[in-house]
Length: 206
Image (tube, rainbow, N blue to C red):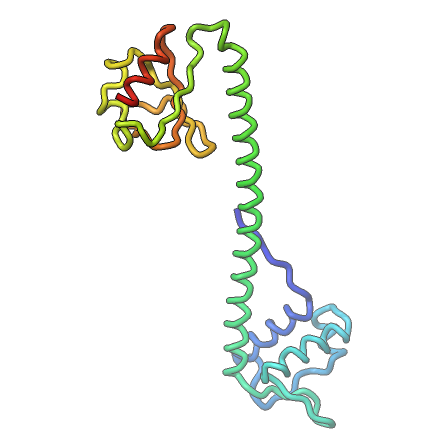
């Protein structure tokens, strides 16, 4: 997704004039048309043109003298201004895009948390009615299998239980599989028979 930064009309005019100077359409030493002529050319008010000329004066691309009007002073400064503005515009675009991405991430995080809460609520309601409802077992620092994978420790062979999910740092990993590793603070969601809790507890801390 791309985002565009809107810039004032007088800034666009200043950039256009700087480009025309750098391209050689307007020569160093030449006079720029009067404000009224430029206003008509760019279809803006004379005040907008005045602001554009003021920008070009500030960066020493043109200079104004009484009786001589606005005179083009430097092609090199025109080039520097074009490049500087391009960098500023890119930074503004990146800033805007970052803000939009952060908003999207916040929405996704909220959606994930809502879904997780629904899953846990549903599991809690079924805990006493469904023998296949998972039990929750926390991996504490005393666990002897921290850093090892589910397959490596032969979890099912030793406990008869199947790990159907892992709650980790606010996220829910569904069907983690044999390559998932045990980390301190993990909460395992395990299904099995009525004695599964005791077997898993012993296995994790034996």
